[in-house]
Amino acid sequence: MNYPKHQGGRDPSHILKTGLLMIVVGLFIAVVPGLGAYLSILILIGIIFAFLGSKVLGKRYRRNYAIAILLIIVMSILELYGLADVMTLMSSLYGATSANYSEIIKAIDPFIFFVAIAYVLLAGSLTIIAYPFMKNINKAFLWIFYFLTVIIVLVDFYFQMNQLNQLYYQSVTLNNVGQFTTISNYIYYGGSAFYFLWGIVMAVAYANSRKMLQPPIPSPGYQNYFYPTETRSSQSQEDNNINNQNNLARTSTPNQNNISICPTCGAANPIDARFCQKCGQQLKP
Image 1 (tube, rainbow, N blue to C red):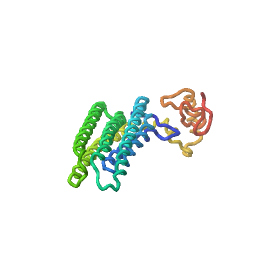
Image 2: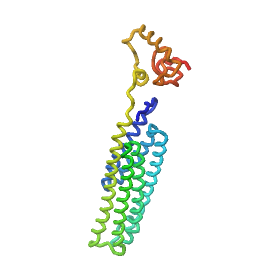
Image 3: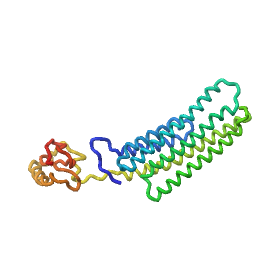
Image 4: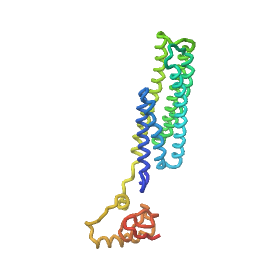
C-alpha cells in the first residue's frame, strides 16, 4: 500500500504507526497486574492516534477506526464503573475488625462482570485496528483468534465467580482468606494472558504496517518538490535557461507525476498550485 506524501503537515502514516506502537506497548505493560491498570491508558491513546492517521487507509477503514474508538471508550467507562464499586467497598471496610464475604462479593461480582465485557470490547477494537495490516489468510485467523480469546476469558471469569460465590455466607478468616486470594490471582492471570496474546497480534500488525506504509521513492521530477534546494551553484545560468525552455511546455497540463513545472526557476509544484512554492512566480492555470 503506497500513499502520497502529504505536505504542510505531519505524515499521517507516521501518526498511524506511532499509534500502533503505543497500543503494543500498552498491551504488554497491562500484562503486569496493578501497574497495567494505570499504564494501559496507552492503549486508548494509541487507538486515538491510529484513528488520526487512518486517512491513509481510505474512508472505509477510517470509519471502522472510529468504531474502534467508540468500543474502547465504552470499555473504559465499564471498567471505571466497576472499579468505583470496589473502591467504595474498600473505603467502607477501612478500620473494620471483621467482615463478611457477602459484602465483598456484592462489589466484586459486578466488577468481574464489567471487566469481562470490557475485554470483549477491547478485543473487538483491536481486531478492527489490526485488520488492514493482515494478509487475506490471516484476516480469517484474526477473527478466529478474537472469538477464542474472548471465550477463554469469559470461561475463566465465570469459573472464578462461581468459586468466589461459595464464600458468600462465610466470614473472612485466616483459614479461608487464602482461597479468596487464589481466586483473585486467577482472575489477574486470565487478564494478563489476554493482554499478552493480543500484544503479540498487535506487534505483528505494527511490523506489517511498517512494510505496507512505505512512502514511494521520489522520482527525479519530485526531487525539487520534496527536497527543495536553496541554490544551484553548480549549474550555470545557461543550463537553467535550457531547462526552463524544456519544462515550459509541460506547465499547462498535468504530467504523470501530477506536478507543474515553474517556467521561471524550473521547480516542481503540485498540479493545483497557483504560485511557485520556490520563487513565487504565478503558474499558468
